[in-house]
Image (cartoon, rainbow, N blue to C red; front, top):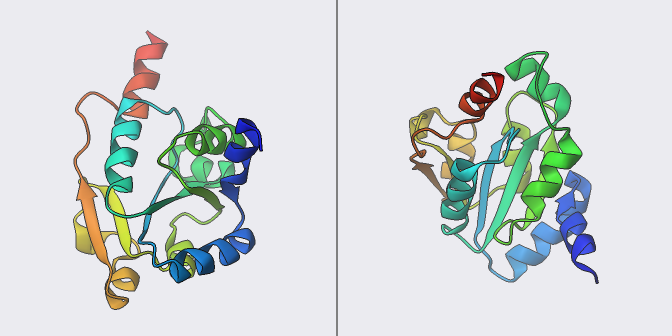
Length: 162
């Protein structure tokens, strides 16, 4: 299989994910989940995702669809369409699956995946993170990771406007 096919195979629908999740659980792999818009991938995203991946064996990223990003961030976003964002994320060696979600929050996706570890940025209190109850009820953990100062999509957009 060529390298581009490997990247493309990491981008999944929920339906495609079912068999993969079953196989992963059979192999007793610890599944880590995080989510976001990931509009412009930058150093902060890379370090955040690498740290998230270190909490388990497999990293699944829930990616907001274009319409979801528009609702959350405004009409001018996303800057990159969902396939571009998913492809960039899937190209990272420590990312195992990228799956889109249309809703404003990933709650339904978290309920579907049932991850062992849920990761978000430390701008959230763990108990306020969407999916906290789902993960805790199944014996999982919720982890927050500090961001790197000066690295955010909004700050990059502002710098680009200068």
